[in-house]
Length: 212
Image (cartoon, rainbow, N blue to C red; front, top):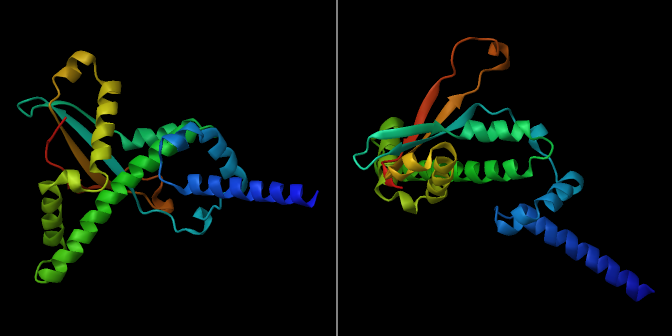
């Protein structure tokens, strides 16, 4: 009897740690396959710290622009807002939308963090540069080898998914390049929530046209 209880406890603990590891791992096919189980695990065991976090000051905007062989614009879409909207509209059964958001947001954050890292290195070696010029140089460096930037290739692949979803097959055949732009958009303070003024957007990075 004692042996059976020990086996039961060890099994439960093993399953718990397995699901904890899977829950905290980056998004992957296994995690998507078991998204219902992950949702159940999150309901009972996930710790929520957002209550203690300060409110965000801005949102990201992600733009895909599709170009032909002469780099003329065919179509352009802002895609991150639709991901957030999908999360909001499919609650509480929005596991897939949550994972898409997590993956795309993580890619954007990876790019932004790389810019900050590059800018810090530039300021160390060229302290005479102001923040604006150091940032421009950092973005220029990222554009030299975008495929080496954490998150870029994933966004490029997502641009293909968006293109197939939003454009006709005939129009999609003419696409030869895609540009990926990331902006930040201010969030109005609560006291100004009724203001009619449009939110201010600031460019973070505009990648050069990349083969589609």
